[in-house]
Length: 202
Image 1: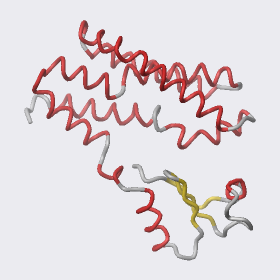
Image 2: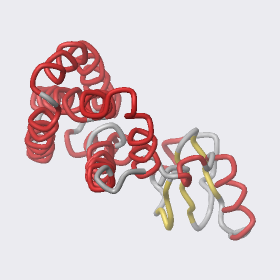
Image 3: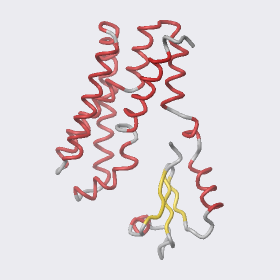
Image 4: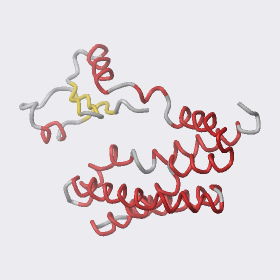
């Protein structure tokens, strides 16, 4: 790997990690707290998130053409501002309408700043030789720890904490002091004090 490419790979790998964590992965952690604060079902949060994904997909081709014309630096820089604005509005949200607007902003930010835009920018800079840089960025922003499945993580939790009941969703786990009276009812788990929670992702 060229020494001239290393700073670009490190910078883009770091910003991609932050961009994914503050957009695509956000609902996994904050959907329920946001819904509770707004007094609505978490379905509204995931619905707004889904709209953001659709918007990002629709904007993708146009943003790719823009990167071909002017390069990726300005586009990726603007993405940081748009994501920051979306997160600020999300933090100030007091209604479903503001929630949707915040996620629309985040959708624009995702279209401007996630892998599609970053890889298009690298392709414009390095051409056919961009594969190494793309691989390097992916290894930084998508580390091997993400390959740990929830099932593996669940087994490790049960092995190391055999006396703690563990509830497992497809990509999330919680560990409580004791199970609810009816473990099959998710809402009862949600009322328990959580000692540890997390996912199979980094």
